Length: 140
Image (cartoon, rainbow, N blue to C red; front, top):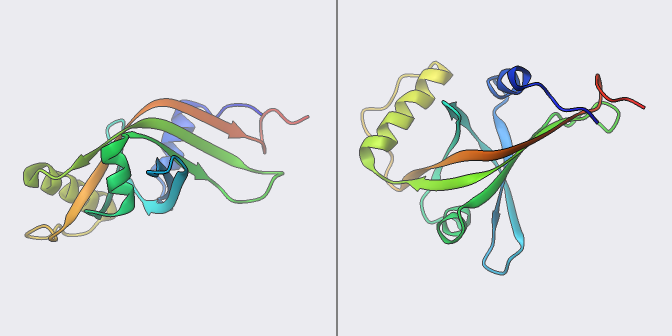
């Protein structure tokens, strides 16, 4: 299967359907995968969540993660993007507020006056991108 061009990756990730699968490594070494919303800040993929969740604990122990976007339309037309990257947990109130304001801006919402207690952000820097596009490229 052929790869998806960089501009198309950016266009896909900036659409309104902003859900991906985030995979971290659990304490026993098995993958821990959860669906999660995201937004982009520069080249980073950012996700908000509650502090202390299993994904946060896993990232603190091992920051290597993968993020999967796929169109879910079946094997004859599947398109996917897999990012492998390094994650960090953002707890700093100033940086959290900056990310919250950006998330609200992208969604067309008013930012809150203050942050939710116990919330953090996961900020992922991709180090490798793997794509596949069966519907329009590389058909046999």
